[in-house]
Amino acid sequence: MDRLQQAIQKARVERANRQQETSTCTVPEPQPVQIQRDEVWTSLPEIKIDHTTVARQRLMSYLGGTEAAPYDMLRTKVLQQVAAHGWRRVALTSPYSDSGKSTSTANLAFSLGRQLELRTVVLDFDLRRMGLAKILKQTGQYNMADVIQGTVPFHEHAVRHGENVIFGLNHVPARNPSEILQSRQVIELLEQIEAVYQPDVILFDTPPLMSSDDSHGFLKNVDCALLLVVAEKTTLDRIDLAERQLAELTSVMGIVLNKCRYSSGAFGYEYGY
Image: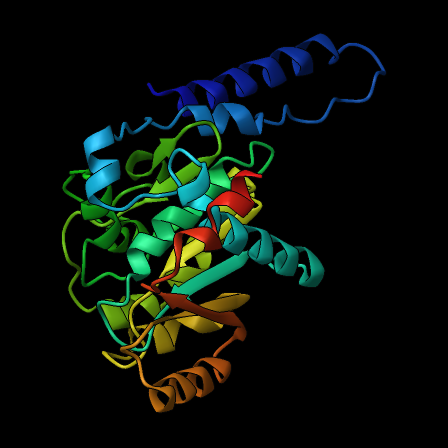
């Protein structure tokens, strides 16, 4: 029995004992024991990411420091917008594939993870691909489609980084991802995750807008979205079209210029100083 099930069973036993003790007196029955959020989080298996993976997959914000500065700045701006508008569900998308969307999602997650008082859940809803799992070098046999459809419970599929970041990954591509992402089951899963894990932020790695209708059916379920575009590659007319399409589905938090070349001084001396 895993730790989550043990915690639930312990709560039931304690509740039953108290009910038995108070059955012969007039003391009001106590409320059921609330399972501590920390215990629910730590019941998940923790992933290990080696330094080779960090370097090869460009996980610049994993350890923090100067190289993490762009993602730390993005993190701060995201948190400011989340706090100002009362948002929680933040999607990351792009006009087309190969925009660095999954890499940016992972880096933003690790940056948020260094804010120790925050709890972040990261869900890979790009169900046609195994983007985050490949970047993090994680293996398995299920995907988030299995979790959405109820084949696999979330607590048996999710993995944890540190004490305050949870990942829901795809290890195999899903069939009929568009239909799955538009189902009522998605709404029920997100409500369940929010009720059990009580995250401060949920990040969604979502499919590119122009490649399929997968994101178009799902993005109505998020509070806002970041649009990732590639410097010197994504044209202004494509950015404009993608932004207008995104605005029809959810609130546009902003546009992130990815794969941008800058001088070492941009985030070097100033950040260390």
